[in-house]
Image (cartoon, rainbow, N blue to C red; front, side):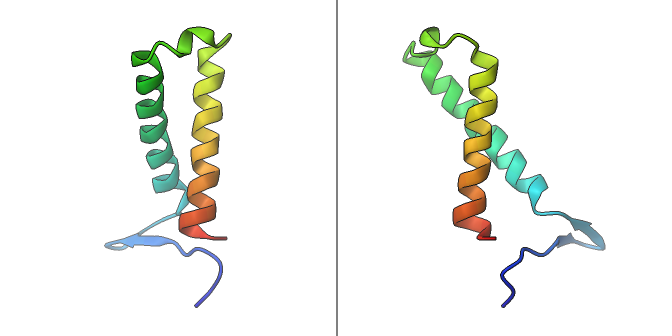
Length: 70
């Protein structure tokens, strides 16, 4: 078994693994920001858009480390 991720194939179309990982991280970041908004913790952040990007990057790194395992 190779340590490097392979392309995902759907029919005859090859998709790089970063696309579903980014999509999943985006959905998880939206859910996290929604929870922070509901708990009114987002008012303590200076720039919420940067926090969204930071959370999304953290999810990408976590998915990469635990799921893809490069």
